[in-house]
Image (cartoon, rainbow, N blue to C red; front, side, top):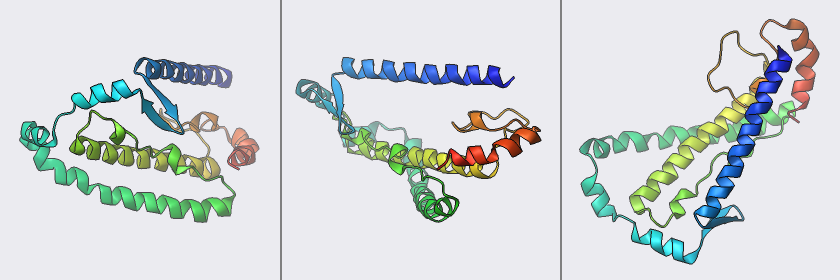
Length: 192
C-alpha cells in the first residue's frame, strides 16, 4: 500500500514540475521575465497594457451595488489576517526555536506583486494586494501548522482529508503504531 501511495505522490510531484514548466513557457509568451523575484515586461507590452486600464471612477460606477456594500466586511478581515500573521511570527520564534524546527519563510507564502500590473487601476491594485496578503497568510499558517503537526502528530487521518498539506504524504498510516514509534524521530529530524 505505501509503495502505491509513494508512486502516486511522485506522480503529483511530477505534475507540479510540469505545471511549473508550462508557467515558464507562458511567461515567455506574455513577454515578461523574472528578475530578482519581480516580473519585468517588455516596454511595448507594458504600454499596451496601460491602455487597457479602466479608470477607478468608471470601475466604481460600473460595480454591482452589492460589491460596494460588502466591501467593508471584506476589508474588515485585514485585522484578523494581520493578527494571525503576527501570531505566526511569535509562535514560530518561540515554539519552533524550542523544538529545533526550521521556521517557514513568510515571503515564500505571502507574495504581493500583482499591484505592479499596468492594466490595473488603483482599486484593483488594492484588491490584489489584499487578496495576495490574505491568501498568503493562510498559506503561511498552513505551513506553520503542518510543521507543528509533523513534529507532534505525524499520523494520517482515518478518513480522507481534502487537499492535505505537502507534508502529509510522509506521515504514518492511521493505526500503524509500530511505524509511528519507529519514524517519529525521523520525521522530526526532517524539520531541522
